[in-house]
Image (cartoon, rainbow, N blue to C red; front, side, top):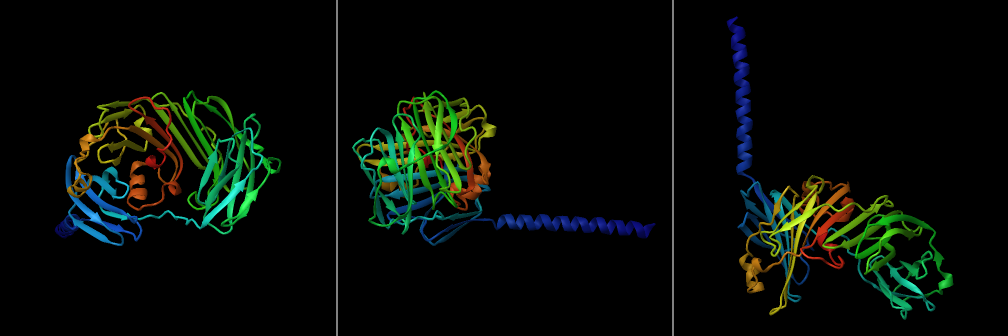
Length: 425
């Protein structure tokens, strides 16, 4: 019996030693923790300067100017903190700031992974008898453009491939189906001319029921592999006075393997943006949630809530400020996980930034709008996965997200939401 007790005692003692050893190894790992920031060879564009800073609350812990193709390490960072990235362009006098609240500080890889197509020239598309249209437009692999001017018979557009693909559309003013022409042989300096009778008629469509609004914009397009490299816009229009009720959206078939749709509208001091990649949307519009803003005159200290915060993946509080005396513009995108109540907590500008923007302070920055986004399809389906993939690994936003709905609230009523798409990505 005594021998059995000795064996049991030794087994217990062995387990205790193993447990202590694991705890000790964990503590050693924690004491060796560091923040590592690596930059690619093209992260900081020519003409820009870039800084990264870390803060907890209103207190800045560290600030580091970063350059391309470098690695920076910082010992013993806090487990979580707010990450701020500053880009200063002295020529344009623009300071862009991105804040990501509640980031786990381990490794950050800053890169520009989006394949940037090069402009190798331009191509011209002409419809000499274009008339009685709401809008006609043209897109290539690198750009898109359109016009509502009845006198405009030609559109010149940049191209990036030789040969490149061109897609032209025309929306008749009488409400009949749009017309289009698809070319696959555009080259630098080429001119393509087609009369309206030579354009094909779109026969595919889906219907949507548009809510009450004072401004509406939409476009549909297609791509094969990525919207960054082989996207073509099939149709687009803007209704500056709004449009509501049943609406038929036309599109061609057989041009690209994947579909893209985009709808945005404004109603009072609310806005809405829907974007889907891959397939035709079945229900692009949803009821607007109740979004509140308090302390709404400034970015710092602004507090906002949304009625269904648990179904949202990302909150953005945005500020756009121009100092009239210096013509310096500051654009600040503050991003955090949506909670029951959300308050913007940001530090003062780092010294290097302050030296470049003069007398502008954080207290000068107004609140421009807040937005809550619901990512319902794709790889990114939470705030943590957004931070991990898009922020810490620099993965292209629209390669990870297949459907997004963004609900916007302005401090005051706005007429339209054009121009904010890049801010919510």
